[in-house]
Length: 152
Image 1 (tube, rainbow, N blue to C red):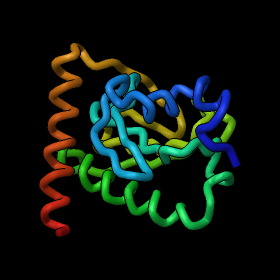
Image 2: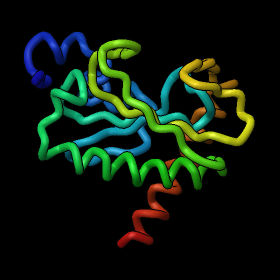
Image 3: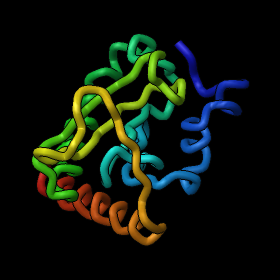
Image 4: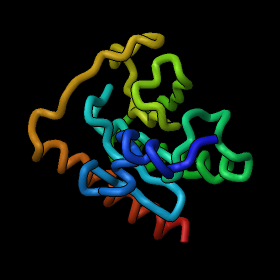
């Protein structure tokens, strides 16, 4: 198990986001987790959900945090689907192989029927402008607030 102490915190990009949330397009944050827009999304609204403490893989995550992390993934999946008007959600975790940042992260990706995503081929795109990224961020954050109120 790894934590955000010592050299890991200095070298891990996602730990950097935890230390400086302004360096990421954060849409959700609580004491244990943070979610932000992927900077090279599969589709607009693609989020990364991370535990704030540094754990490299799902196997490193303490058992007592698994349920809480996936409860957030479930909630944010509902948020993204509603905010982006998608037909469904794709959720993925890479562990070591395919893991571009060695910090546990859950991809929450809005999907549409016939969107061109087949198997594990992930064609990346970029937001057309900072304004478009800000609009997507605002939509997701507004839906988080709305659904948080509904769930009381």
